[in-house]
Length: 276
Length: 276
Ligand SMILES: NC(=O)c1ccc[n+]([C@@H]2O[C@H](COP(=O)([O-])OP(=O)(O)OC[C@H]3O[C@@H](n4cnc5c(N)ncnc54)[C@H](OP(=O)(O)O)[C@@H]3O)[C@@H](O)[C@H]2O)c1
Ligand SMILES: NC(=O)c1ccc[n+]([C@@H]2O[C@H](COP(=O)([O-])OP(=O)(O)OC[C@H]3O[C@@H](n4cnc5c(N)ncnc54)[C@H](OP(=O)(O)O)[C@@H]3O)[C@@H](O)[C@H]2O)c1
Image (cartoon, rainbow over all chains, first blue to last red; front, side):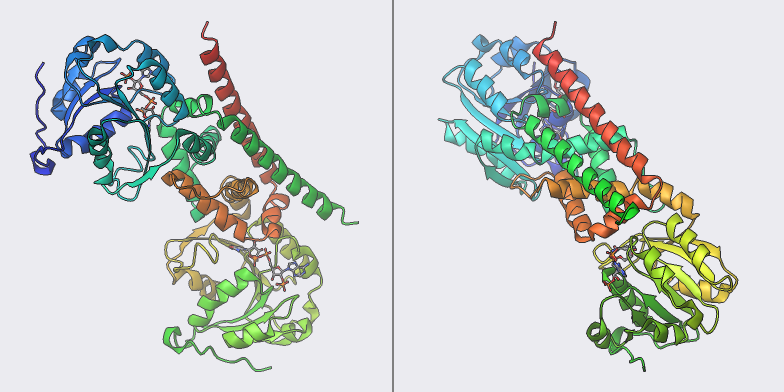
């Protein structure tokens, strides 16, 4: 199977020494979003996925492999794991790793980090490098470019620094804030930020809140949070909960904080009704 | 007591036929925010409050009355109620209404609407007009002007249309979206928007959430909601709950929606752990 070149000539940089051969596993919404920039930068992309994305890949000018063995036999500098959090274990354990012709850099972009790190270290060949990353943006928040958006990474097992830094350069060159931290630190912070945001967004969606003719600016922000988080799959949201060991405590903290506020309101109401 | 003129000459329109004599009761943060624009437009402002704001009013070039009788004897086209929701009943019942020399337009800006409407209709002289309003913005969201921000109003009892429309013009001329609706409709909508926003903001403050190096855009919006709602007084927040008859149900809806989302997460987690 011969890979076609992007026909977005106008926005495509000419491939240079820094261009990478990147094989993507899992071609869902997030991978489709990421490749647009990678193609623009002149990287050479192949993809495989559970579902058939042949037509879409043809349109994008990249190769799609229905056969995982063929995908693995093709020569990739980077294997980029873009599957859902919940399917990673199954996907990674079924990879035909024996078809790999030479060591590659395995990178994941899952929204939790300790879990894919542990799985990758457990399953992948010891001579392959492992980079755990989390671009802190998606099709919505990164629609108008990636400038100033955070990109978290942890160089878990890197021997080939050249390939690793070329991969990181994809994000650095778009203006991302490159945040190097451990997977543990990521999961601790994101349980209190991203997971909390998704939970509140889903709660607001469950309440079916809608814009009103008398919205305050604060309420408009909540509507935006509701809309952007509901656009992500429920698999993504539940992955944030199930495979981040800090998330359960934060869900509990949210519930406790809600209880506290509710009690404060009821106490104040009783004082008003019976001021004696 | 002679009112001084604003010395903000550069931004002040010259007083015209449309200028009003506005007496403000309750000179807290929101009244202080409103008067800046009223002064700029050339209205003639007097204020009274529980606390002494003589120095601040001197700086603003307006009169402050420590004595409520004197305030009421001075001749006002509009009496603007800017007290907290929780103190309105006490404040309104202690007004020396007998000192009123002629009928005035009573306006309130409370963030709930059925409650002040009922109180004003019950207590104020029958020959005084009543306009219930809620500017859907505050010192934070209206910092850079009021253009495109919503202003809700209900002409509850208006005979002098001229004074009423001159008052509304204060907001219309700044570009506010003028939303005429009943007090009931306001309370129904704002229990699902503003009260919900304040509740979530307070819950996030109770959790002590803070920016992280890997914030998503959605989480940054929640931080903003937390910060702007925590800046308002707890009296304001509890007023939204105690004196809006739709708020209790929305607090319950929020709790139920949270329970639903939590159960969905736990169900999904159990399916993952025991897929049989
Ligand atoms: N969306 C974002 O904004 C964002 C941002 C940063 C990181 N991420 C991460 O990027 C990854 C992809 O996210 P996403 O938004 O595209 O949606 P997602 O629902 O998390 O994942 C969809 C992808 O997972 C694959 N998949 C799902 N179940 C599978 C199974 N049982 N077997 C094999 N493959 C399976 C899908 O394959 P098919 O399409 O072939 O069915 C698709 O490629 C996730 O790990 C997510 O945490 C997402
Ligand atoms: N802040 C906003 O963004 C906003 C927006 C729209 C509408 N509003 C409404 O505007 C009104 C004022 O809001 P605010 O932000 O200034 O804060 P607030 O805490 O709701 O009200 C403060 C005002 O209430 C007075 N007050 C409180 N307790 C009193 C008592 N026991 N007796 C007499 N006066 C008492 C204070 O008088 P002293 O200062 O003299 O102590 C001050 O003038 C509220 O009804 C609020 O719902 C506020």
